[in-house]
Length: 437
Image (cartoon, rainbow, N blue to C red; front, top):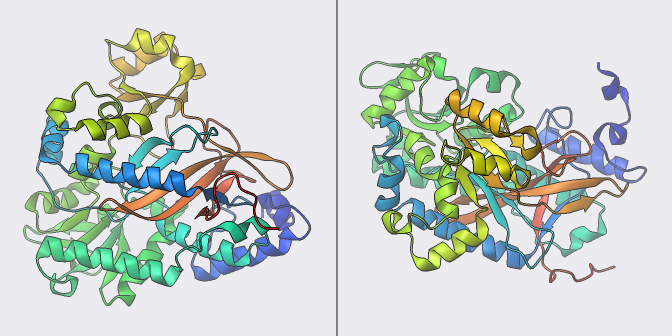
C-alpha cells in the first residue's frame, strides 16, 4: 500500500473536511458498485461540480450542428482526405456514437466558448453519465439545486443502445441481431491492462449483452481475418460490429492487419475508423476550421464561417514556411502533435523555440500550433484553485451528454487531487444570478 492510500479519503482526494468526507465516501462507494472500480485511486474526481449556462450550451449546440454539416459534405471529405493515407480516402458510412468535443469556456462571459479539439474516440462516456447522476444524488453542495437534473444512467444506457441499433441498421440494412457476429469493444493491450478507462469498456460490453447481443472486449492481436470474416480467436467467433478504442488511427501497426483487412473488405462495422478520423478529428483540420482561406474549395458557407471562426482558436499546421513566425508568437500558442491523444506531446510556448520547432520538422513529426484559449477557474471549499474544461458528447449533430475535467494547472491537464473529472450540469438560473439559499 502506498503512503497516500493510508490517509483519510478527503486528504487523499482533495475533498474538504469534515462534512464532505461522508459525501466522498458515499460517492465512491456508489461508483464502485456501478462498475468504476478504480475510483478514486486511478480515476480521480474533483470535489466540486461545474455549471454551464444555457446560453453557452446553445452556442455549443449550434457549433456542433455546423461542424457536423461541414465535415459530412463530400466536398470537405474529398479535399481533406486527398493527402491522407490511402486507407482513409474511401468514404465510409459509420458515425461514432462516442464522438466528443473539448471546449474551453472563457472567464469573460461575453467571449464565445472555444473548441480545443474533436475526438471521435471520446473516452469517459460511460463514466461521465454515472458520475453526473451519483454526484447530483449524493452532493451536499447547496448550488446543486440550481442545475438541470442529469439524465439517469438507465435512460442513458437505453440511448446508447438505440444509437448502436441505428448504426447497425444503417450499415447492414438489418437489425443487429441479424448481422451474424459479435459486438467487439476493441482497445490496445496496454489500455485494457492498466488504462484508466478499462472498466468503462466492460460497462459497454455488459450493456450490449443486456441488449441481447453477443459482446466481448478484446485487443487487435486477438483478431484474425480468414478472407471472409473477422474472427475473435478466443471464441473463434465472427465479429460484426467494432467499437474501436484503439489510438492507431490509420490502422498502421502490424497487429492491426486483421482489422485493416476487414475494414478494406467493408463487411464489418468499425467506428471510429481512418475515414472518420481523417475527416473529423485529425488536429490538422483545426487550421481549416479556424481560417476561411479555403472555404470555397471546402464548401463552407458564409454563415457557417462566422460560427466556425468565432469558436475555433486560430490554428496553424507547423511547416517550413511558418516556423519562424510561430516561434516568434510562441508565448500565445500551444503546440500539439497532430495525431496525439490524452495531451501526450503537448508543448507550451515556453518549451519551444525556433531550433526545437525545426527539429520537430526534421524528424517528420506533424504538429499544430493553436492560440491559447483560457479556461474558467473554479475554487474548492478549501480555497484551492482548479481550471476546468468541458467535454461534450454528440451524435449526428445532437448533444446528449457532457462532463469536464478540473486541472491543478491552468495550461496543462493535471488531474492529480484535488483535480480530476468534474460532474457537469446545465445551469437553470440565468448566468450571474445567485443560487437559492
